[in-house]
Amino acid sequence: MRAGRAVKRDELLPGDLVFFQNTYQPGLSHSGIYVGNGRFISAASEGQGVRFDRIDDPYWGPRYFGASRPW
Image 1 (cartoon, rainbow, N blue to C red):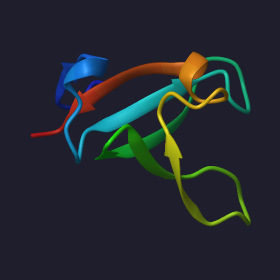
Image 2: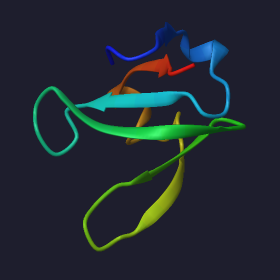
Image 3: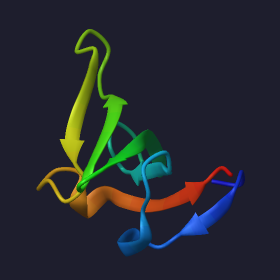
Image 4: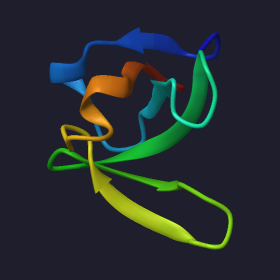
């Protein structure tokens, strides 16, 4: 999350990078790209391909770590 500037969850814009913790390992462990309307795109697991998920999903919501705007 060192690139760009930190963004509050309620100020996310399409293209912002979103980060999650404690997914497949402790600490910061997953990232995606916010696409708007409360959704982000990422490659969640090998073999599952790219998927869209809600940022407030029961799985992802509690694991949300923060966001960065790269521009």
